[in-house]
Image (cartoon, rainbow, N blue to C red; front, side):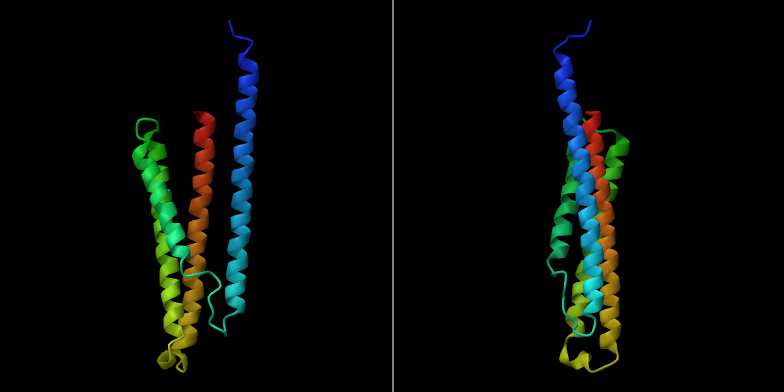
Amino acid sequence: MQNCDDAPVQKHSHSVARYRAICAEACNALLGLFLIGAIILQARDYAKASEVVPASSFAVMLSLASFAVSWARINPPNATEGEQRRVKRIGLDMLMGSILTLISSGLLLMSTDSAIKSTIMSPVMIALHIGFLAAGLLMGWLALSRMLRESVRVATTA
């Protein structure tokens, strides 16, 4: 026999799970818009060789990668093997994205050096900078969106 007091608790739990899912998708969409905007702004400022996304963006992605890998390592009793693999993959993807954004910042820094700025290598380095930045931010965004979805999925199944 079911306790009649369980219905409000289940309804509240379902509302919280739906709220989490909506927030995760909203964050995902806003981060996607940020990604597109950052790449467009960086490409628009191609000739100025200025940095639209700060060089410290790799540190943010690196800390999120650390969080994802720690999450997979700490949760073994409560998580399935598949969940652990997915979360570790997310962490590794974020680590790769942070390395790509760090390389991007290094390329931009090198392209502004006075010895390189007057050569043909400067536009090549700026183009590589934009490519590495786009790849790193895209990889980080995809990993973060999977992480948000994984957290919602884990919360609804718990």
